[in-house]
Length: 255
Image 1 (tube, rainbow, N blue to C red):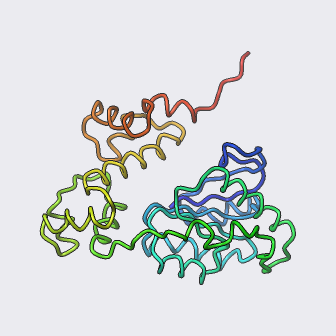
Image 2: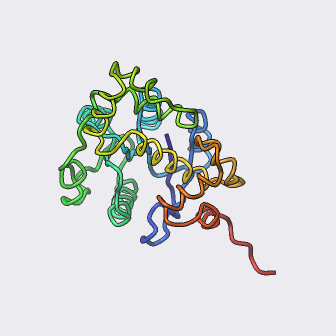
């Protein structure tokens, strides 16, 4: 879970004018202090593969801060999850990836709505028609992975550990071969490639954190061979991990 309180100068939208501050939160217990200190206009809650525990963030924010709208982004999508999100009064639900242009327009619209709304009111009429569901993000929903969902949920918690195909297949009550066929059918790629992509995605998140070292990140996401991690990172991301990390380092001012 990546929960962001958004107020006034933003790095969420690289192509948009910088007009929002983004505070990243990863633990539920940090929410109240962050809201008190920064007084955000709205929340963005981002998931890769949400489980029941992580979804508590939505319920907590809606209960404790009903005046603050919530944007929910998720990579793993099902119709049931979308219905649950809107029943929880999420302001908008989007399936990743979301284009920078769409994200910029969402934030601009939401910031405008936040300025106009009184406490506990929802200004849905301010939402541009072409951004309303299902005009894009739910038009072609991903297929719910009924047979392999248990494996995906396990990986979201244990991606840094050694993974044996027979173990995750057993979680789904399938043989190794049945699991491999079902996973490819439901996700459009092999389980091994899925695991590799997931680990590289988590590595990108960790490398954006201050003081993270490439070797620490590699081991944290499940790579025992640093050179192998370097090759895979460059293959999937397009640049070396060290170069990617430098993008997030604060630039020193000339003396």
